[in-house]
Length: 182
Image 1 (cartoon, rainbow, N blue to C red):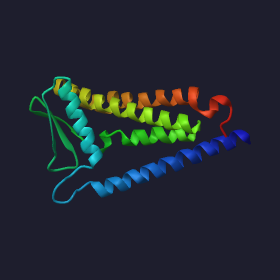
Image 2 (image 1 turned 135 degrees about the vertical axis):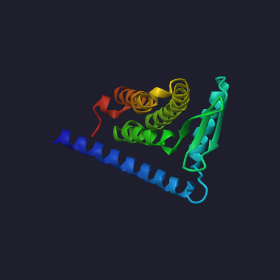
Image 3 (image 1 turned 90 degrees about the vertical axis):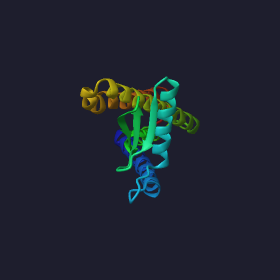
Image 4 (image 1 turned 180 degrees about the vertical axis):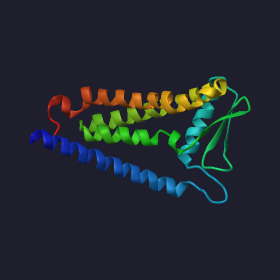
């Protein structure tokens, strides 16, 4: 019975955290995106696109970004060629929400949860920016591999990192390692 209680507590914490954060994010998107006559992405999508642009320039690429006029996306161009688009799903926010829900569900001390949540979220965000740049560069050089790059290789990077962070959390920082979870 004790084992079942721990599983139930984990599931309640995980889904409560996930749905609260996802609900808040969905509300934010509904309030900040514009789909009517003029398409305008949410500020977080714009921020991600801006970071992709700035880091690309720092890495020596001839990059440009612009709001797409026909959809909720921001065009990303390399050497004048439109190579990819940055949409809400590219922001890494949904992955960060999933990451945070997991570490909150596998309780740790408040301090560890706060610093690891912040550290992990920032790391996921940075890796995501680099992932978008790498994906765009590879799209530009190898357009015939776009589908496999987008659908298989690059999700593996962001979700693989999240999985490694989860394992690190459980092994070193959660109460589970101390036998206190539940």
